[in-house]
Image (cartoon, rainbow, N blue to C red; front, side):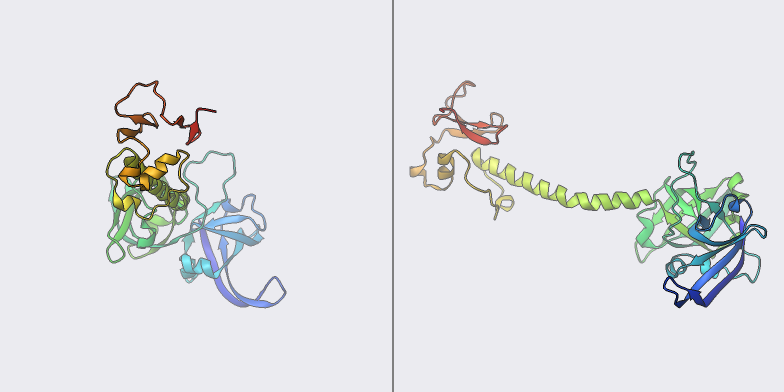
Length: 309
């Protein structure tokens, strides 16, 4: 853990082009977190990934900048150093080591509010109110980051935009001694980061659903068309305004679909049999029979092939 030394908004900060602009800076004091730290490295402050812009190794302090987006999405702007205010500090993890939690990016989604807390033997439970728009990413036994601490969700309750939306989690005895959360009270706020894998899954699903729906529509159209070819009744809603493309290679089949009964080329007993992928005469069901006009449906070609070539 660390301590907030100062939080200052200045109007004389130098921007990339040499001009002056307004910005907010925070100075913090830490110990272990500065081991191996360097200018430009990332340090998590209450779950917020920030960049170290100044480091004083002797005083064990470092400075970070707080962007407007950071102030809007997190509670760091409320940490005024009027009294001793502690924060969780964490170095960036190394690639290749064991991951004893989940991937916490330090990209806070929103602020939650402590609704209740209680003790269950040696565990400390918290109930957090959270905006409805993010509740779809919170699932029982899933990951959640609270002030940068990787925790497991216990219960989830969501009633919609106008109802109550909350989740619970608990702290084991060891964790209680290593973070600032046990010192917070009902009504205090916490920085919440949902599991990013849920966001990636949702985005991938959004890209997949339209393709799946289009495929289902096409299958229904093909099913309806097969019913027509088999002599059954088709579902009008499934075939209305459907463009089946150019007539299939068996010309008399296309003609039979539109010609009056007296002009049909095929015998009334000639039916499309799906299992055979061919037109079969109902009076002659021998497997070795050939279509009378010398054509057969070839599944691998998805077309009618003239066998008399």
